[in-house]
Image: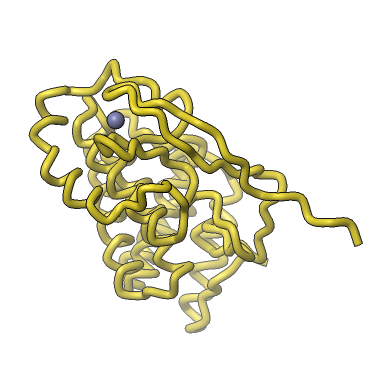
Length: 237
Ligand SMILES: [Zn+2]
């Protein structure tokens, strides 16, 4: 049998704020294996979860952001807000490992630090915050911590609902409106509110004007019949 190729590769980055050089771990995405896809589209990984490596954290000032382009870009950073949040960063940073090595715990911590940076950026959509809370929930799911998973899914749901109600163009990436409403349905269902979930799923099915990937229509139909029969699926086959 051929030897398995390494999944992680190490590199170096430098902080655009304090110029500290530090080591980073990156993932060869094409070498990552996942077992199944949850109905909220999180993947169940065999071992390495690439999400845990998505955020770079400066080990000196604890500025944290998505790697590469976004990490380098501090043009939209409100420096006075960033400074005000220093105690929060330091508190989280005090438990951050010096060697930057990623475990699931460190992955969660990196997202929490990235949320602190996000609070200092200008004009960030509520949907953007939601996507960070959602990622934290997914890592807690992999850890088997149900309470924290639910707590962060609720935070994500709140922000997605804010985005959907108040923002002209919520930053929802590729998922489109059908994906956003389906996601709010899944978050409601997974946090114990089947009634609200059904309303969201129904909304995607009945609203013909809604744009986005049509696959969500099928997901909504399957979810509605699953809830009705008392056996909503946890994974998509
Ligand atoms: Zn720094």
